[in-house]
Amino acid sequence: MNFEAYRSITFSRRNRVLTITLNRPDSLNAVDAQMHEELAQVFVDASRDPESDLIVVTGAGRAFCAGGDIDWMQEAIDVPARFEKTAREAKQIVYSLLDCEKPVIAKVNGHATGLGATIALFCDLIFASKRAKIGDPHVSVGFVAGDGGAVIWPQLIGYARAKEYLLTGDLMPAEDAARIGLINRAVDGEELDALVDSYADRLNAGAIKAIRWTKMATNIGLKQLAHSMMDACLAYESLSNVTRDHQEAVNAFREKRAAIFTGE
Image 1 (cartoon, rainbow, N blue to C red):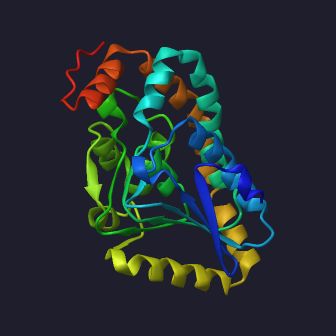
Image 2: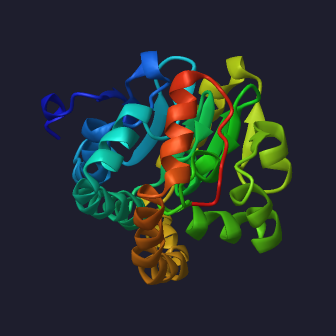
């Protein structure tokens, strides 16, 4: 892998485990245009990396990933044509996670929201700190949950519970997420590294080809679902990008006030 090509993502190795770290800690690893473009490529590159058999994804600082960067959202409102590139990249992020033969573990060290939650939930194992919260608050900013949330949430916790969270944008504590099956386990923050390392080492000590191909076999149905849904999901998201409610939500976020939605 050409690590030097990445500006907002860093990498480290431990034996044959490659850790991918989202590295915009001052903004809680919120995704801007640069990081989004890199996320669309990083799992492709990591899957081809000859020096690793397993991938860990985490965030720098106190968050895993706080979703989309608010300034980037405004840029998309101002120049809607840019959403075409964003949509292509959004599909590639999801598809590349599903197509990666190597097991991918999400180490959710802090809040994972919006696209951050989508990335975590499309990983094969999701371990979180108890201090983390997980949610998809797209609707809270007048946006459709089109980047994969509408695909993965119902598969993990069923449609009724998924709609409860997708339609409200509510965040849930990691312990609740583990209890209902959204993630695998929530542990005290100081235990998270050891837990992830132990699972990574266990998998890497196993029959690697059998593990990889079992992952791919298990993902067949999810891949079919993602390919059947993502274009429509992103089309709806692009429509919401030019609504007045979305602009109001962006304005409210910047002005540190509650948004007043009008349904327009």
